[in-house]
Every structure is written in C-alpha cells, then in structure tokens.
Image (spheres, rainbow over the protein chains, first blue to last red):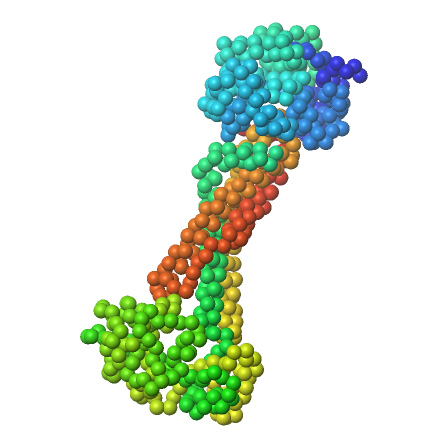
Amino acid sequence: MPNNLIIHLDDVYKIYFEGQESEVRALQGITLKVKKGEFIAIIGKSGSGKSTAMNLIGCLDIPSRGKAYLDNQNIANLSESSLAHLRGKKIGFIFQRFNLIPSLTAKENVGLPMLFQKLSRTTRLNKASKLLNLVGLQERADHFPAQLSGGESQRVAIARSLANDPELILADEPTGNLDTKTGEQIMDLLTALNKKEGKTIIMITHDTAQAQAAERLIKLRDGQILTDE
Amino acid sequence: MIHDYFNFAILSVRHRALRSWLTIIGIVIGVAAIMALIMVSVGLKTAIKEQFDLFGSERILISAQGFQGPGTLAAGLTKKDVETVKSIGSFKYVAPALFRQAEVRFKNEVKFTSVSGFPAKDFEEAFGDIGVDLTEGRMFRKGEKGVAVIGFRVATEMFDEDPRIKSRIKINGESFKVIGIFEEIGNSQDDNAINVPMEDARVIFKEPNAVDGIMAQAKPGADIPFLQKRVERALERARDDENFQVLTAAQILDQINTTLAVVQVVLIGIAAISLLVGGIGIMNSMYTSVVERTRDIGIMKAIGATKNDIIGIFLMESGLVGLFGGIIGVALGTGLAFLVGFIADQAGFSLLKITINWGLILFGLGFAVVIGMISGTLPAVRASRLKPVDALRYE
C-alpha cells in the first residue's frame, strides 16, 4: 500500500442492529483513499451516512465489514487503548458543537489532548499558548467555555485539534453553529492550515457553497459514494 | 500523570461546587463521628489508667460483696477482718476505711457529700504512696482528732464562702477543724470528699465496728496475685463465708476496659454505618456525574483518552471528595472530642485529657480517601466503558 495514504476505507459497511427488524445499513460498501495534504469535503443529506463515515475515519468506531486503515494500520486489529492513543496523536477533531470541556479554561482545553499523550505540564502549557496565539485568542486563554462566543469556542477547538500535531484534521460541520461571517473566518483558518501547515483536512458539511473551499468533493447518498471529484 | 488527574479532579469538583459539598458532608459526618469517638475513648482509657496508677499497683482492696438478691443481706466487713488481713504479715500497712454520705455545715450552709474515715496513723503514708499532695496545710497524724482534710472542690466550689485552713466545719453535727486541702485529683468523687480520722468517723456514723473497705498496701516487690489469694483464703477461713471480694488495681482496670471496649465497638459500629451511607452518597453523586458528563467523556475519548485515563480521572475525583470530607471530618471530630473533654472538665472530671494523635488523623484521612475511591470505582469503570460514538451523541 502506498504510504502517502493517511486514510484508506476498503469496501466498508456499517450496519446497525444487523439481522434485526430495525436493521440500519448506514454505510454500504464505501471505498475511499485520502492522501496526506488533501482538503476533502464530504457532503450529503442527513441520513446519507456522512456521520457514520466520519466516525470510521476518526477511528471512533470500527466497520461491520471491510477494512479501515489509519496511516496504514488496520484499526480493527488495534486494542481499544492503542486506538485511543493513535487517535489522539494522528487526528484532530473539530465538532459542530465545539465540544469543549466546560470545567476547563481555554488553555487547559487546548492542552488536554497532550495530557492524554502523557506530555509534561510545562510542554502542554507552552504549546497551548502558542496554539491560542495562532488562532488569535491568546487574551482569552484563562476564560471558561461559557465565557466565549461561538466563534471563539470554535477557534479554541481548532487550537485543540492541533495540539498533538496531527496529520489529519477531521471537521464535522465546523461552521454549523456559527453565523455566516464567523463561519467564513473559521473556513479561512482551516484553509490556511491546509495550505500553510500542510494538514490533511476532511470536512463534513451539508453546505455546498462551503464545500467549494475543498479541493476534492465527495457526495454521499444512502450510504454509498455518489460522486468523487 | 497522577498530578494531572488531580488537577483535573479539583477543577471538576470546583465546577460542581454545591453538589460536591453535599457529597462531602456525608463523609464529614462519618469521619467526624469516628474520630471524636476514638479520641474520647482513648482519653477515657488513659484517664482510667491514670486513676489506677494513682490507686497504685501494689494495693489490694477488700470490700464487702454488696446486696446479692432478694432475701439475702451480706454481712459487711468488720474490725476483725482487718486483723485477719494484718495477720498475714506481708503488708506495709492495712488500713480500714469508712465511706459514707454526711451532712456538712459551713457557716450557715448545709451540703451533703461523702466523708471518709481513715486511720490517722496511716493517712499520710497512704496518700503519699499514691502521690496525692496538699495545696495547703498538712495531713492528720497518729492520735489526732477533730481534724479534717478536705477535697479540692470542697475548698473551692461547694460553699458560697470557701473554707480555709483553720475554718471549722460541722459534719453530722460534730465540729472539725480544717487542717489540709488536697490538690485537684480530677474526679468529682475524690475532689468533693472530706477525710477525717477513723475514730471520729466511727462517732459521726455511729459505726463502732463496721468497715466499708480495707486497703492493704503490699511491701515493694511482693507477688500481688499470690498475696491476693492468701488474703482470700485467710478471710474465708476466719469469716466462714464468701461475702467479700479481694481486688487488685489491675483486675479492676481490666473489668473497666472490657466494658469500655464493648461500648467502643458499638459506637464505632454506628459511626461506620454513617460512613457507609456517606460512601453511598459519593457513589450516587459520581454516577450522576458520569451521566452528566457522558459527552465530556466522549470528547476526551475522541481526543485520545484511554479507558485507564477515564478511570483515573473519575477515581481521583471521588478520592478527592473523600479527602475533602476527611479533612473537614477530622477537624470537626477533633474539635468535638476537645469539646467533650472541656465539658467533662467543667463537670469535675478533669482527668479526661484529649490529645492530638497524628497517627489517628492520618488514618482518618486515608480511610476517607479509600472510602471515596471504593465508592467511585463502579461509576469510573462505567464511564470508561462508554463508547466514544455513543457518548458524543449524548445530549
């Protein structure tokens, strides 16, 4: 397998409640190769399977059938802890609802992924400061999530996603909870990360206009890839 | 890593301050109760031991066996029994005593208190042997009559106007001159007593022959248990009955300690139940916390937390709740114990000395932490088993 692939889904199925009456075939034979440095948008209506695809790409779930590779490692062969470790190191998550930990300050939130990689406190705090600086929020470092606006929260989340220098940033509807103007700022930030830092970005969205920012557009429907261009 | 979990736990406990406090209170009550009970009972044991050290380990006490049930009337001890004990010959002195309640009048005030009659010739030596001193005046001596040595509280609290050396008090109508005042012994029985020569006591109690107790002081180095048996045998033979008991300080101490141990076990058992309830409180709170933070757990797992990280975070949190409860509980329990000591002192039992025991304090803290962690184990394991996908979807 060529080693410039960060993600490789090979004829992947995800079926919930298999064999039961309520069986849901969320993904039905998806094959997807993502090269390092790509900026991909995955679009589709709700129910198209894009969230399920995101969970598999993010190693949050394993396929029912088929194989999923992260950086050439079959995720089905990894123990739960190694998977968690790998996920923390290789993937940065950005969620629609920001998903910051409410009891931690912005800086502590940014430092959290490094804590799970067992980095020292000093290293974490230094890196967190730098990252907050990068997203333009250095003066908000000691604020709690409840004290931040939506745009600020998402910028903290982006800083957090960069904490362990991941190769892949997985953004699930990153602008879904933001107004247009703030959403554009976030998109600019993501584009810059792709262009300047060379990060691979996979963004899930239902906004066709936003998806234009990506180099590659994948449309999902009924758990299958409709177009890939 | 541990340090990071600790910080994380502190932040989380702080974030849910009110609920954390409510949970902590459960542990506080249990720990405080156990600490106070242990400290007071340790103090009590020490006090009793001191009291018996005072009594002296080389002393044998002979008393009549009291009322033994309907229809029997135990025959009391008499002067004759004193002679029997003396005839054994292994004692420094054998002193009979009479202990009775009497009416005591000073100026125009009348009180009832215990008055002891003690042989004038042995008085100084007997009290000297157990290390009790006078604050003022002197002990009575051989051949003296109409004199009294009064307890500390008789001299300081009993009457509106305090009797002093050379004051005259009337006991059951007979006049006595105060010649000595004892130092504070620490129990209200002794501190409220008045001591007079035996011959005077026989007159005021109208008891020419009876004896309430016999104190036999062994010569130094004597084999006390052996001596005790000899006294028993001699008295049995002379009296032809068994209506008396011969006790040593060690035996009495044993009896009291046994009783105390039972009381201690019961009280600590009750306190342990309250600690158990506190633990269940922590468990409940931690379960709620796990449910509330399902989403947080999902986030943490998504950004790289392993099962063990999640268990570590939640265990640290419940341990911390236990520790906070322990710190407050130990402080409160210690305060409570000192309060009991203070009240006992005010009530005349100044022998009860509460002391800070660091070992016990550490034990209390450690115990609280362990209870917290045990209570947090199940919720922590449950939290760690949440799948990141499900947890992230949780609203």
